[in-house]
Length: 581
Image (cartoon, rainbow, N blue to C red; front, side, top):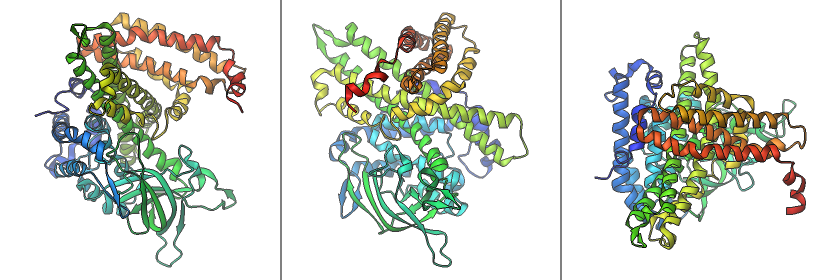
């Protein structure tokens, strides 16, 4: 039987070598639930075995059911009848299998029927699923919404919703985007009005339109809406200050007006929703809808999209490698030709680079969350825990947009090259390569474009967070590859020189913004180099992969450095005349 975990040696490698013990101990609260829940782990070893077992079940479902049906799902998609979405039968069958295997509450506490898995294991699961069918991931685990409810909703709200999400009885959706509020969520205008009926103060009514809502047919949704007027207590409440977060359960006061016709991820219904006095409940505090709850939700979702991108790239690479081995030209398999095996090798290394960055990011997110939970349970403990919590919050805030940018751009490049390796056949719908190419295209757009990820990541680069983690990585034992560490250190000097130059620049006021992507890419290159070198301590093959990545890394760093240091603002001075203004 095909199993998308068991046939992926790199995921198994990380599952074995990732530093998860502290996360496990804190996540399991000293393993005290082992007495009450038969599947709760008794120690770190038991937890790791449980993780691998669950991932293996997912890998089996993906290999045996989801992947074979993906072309059919892509061709047929879901349908909309009388304002009701009907999922593709193959999609519904896969969802039923996930629910039967108790996989839907992946990261949710056991008290609600969940599995209490760490984010790092969720990222592995998400990658495996996306390799099988990228569209299924968009609602197959529904963890972003469930985790947000678990973190911020009231005990009553959690008890009412989470068990039904964990059982698979209900689906869920993140209801944020509007026709005139895409990336700029401060422009959201869907109105939320609090009931004035005595005894119903806890009920709010939503009115307006939301667009591009993934799985908008879900039974429950988290809705970003404008709850405040123009002023409250003498303060202007335009923009983010006027937005709150709401829990909405599907009723006849919301209709699905249409399903979007998309380039890719056809199995996932993307809906336009119209609310008309739809009842909802406030989640958390008023006016914190965007600045606190949506930002937390979107950061989790961005990590999921990075995993989705790695999974799509893995699928595309495997298709290309298989085709190149079978396709004979000039009397030999094209896989043996240097122009082709160079592409395949760089695709493989780029995917492993994205994967190690994804899992490192997930680990930082896990540490941030378990330390926050620990400090809430034991508020009397301060000192080191508080400092660690701050550290991992900063690292998670930096790495999340960085991995979203890197992994999604990488997936677009890998799927592009996969079609190129197929030649003309890759352009045909009979082959999976063109589907992966279409599916990849959305990943660097939704949940924040690459350009927005750069905006989020450049602050940590210029404030010293990137330098802090690079220093930490450099202090590790690299005796297995000292010459590779010296290459990284030499490139690091160029990066530091470039960053100092940009921070001291007194010319055009947009100079830093203009070069932000180049600076973030330089930092990303260095971080991935260290991570691959760290992985290489456990594997000779990994050392070779690290060598391939690091061989080209300095030239990219140097090219960005040379352009930034020699650039006299030519584009900044002339772009208006060139494109018109």
